[in-house]
Image (cartoon, rainbow, N blue to C red; front, side):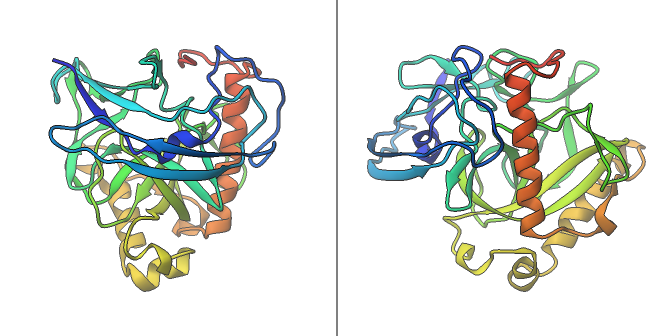
Length: 309
């Protein structure tokens, strides 16, 4: 039986570019275009006995100018049983139409905040990810040789992606050993104390960036925190993470450096002096990968096997 869950609704008050169905009418990088304003009453679907209502408002600068829609609700629908090859987590708009968490959830919320889509809840090991090559890019468990993939040990933070970003595999980053993008959305490590749910959308603020090099490919890790976390107001840049979450940046780097070693693979490497870059650098990475995503969905660069639905 399919199960409907309520997604965090902060993500859906910004304009959404429903590509390729709606045409793009202009270009530009992060921050281009004028924002709108919405004040909507949100009524998420019941999840078991849970129900809530609240008023939300959002100032909504756009990543680039496009045909925009306001979507007051996002519904999460699980299809298949968890930890099976058939399991998928689909996103639906208010009308019931499937939408892509990668393409249709907006990146920016204004005031330096971004939407983060949780793929892997903290303290779990199933390797969940957006299926970038499937229609509507649902979340599924990754596979290798037909078998479900698991990390060798739990990941200690919520892990997921920034929507409307893409690490272009045709671009070499001269600041990070000339490594090419890994053909995926940008990854986020969310360090808040609460365990997110698969498919949950959180408002986060970026704090730092780690330039992981995985088998020669650049795989950015943006370190961020949910603004609902009790300590969110204390951390605004990389040095604040060191102060209020001591040892966390080193632990994140070491976790991603070593997680493939138990499978007999070499450790991953890191650029930028093997250290976490600051918030400004993280914002630069987000802006550049948002621009790459815009080119992808406008088909000015080849999509290959990636789904743009």
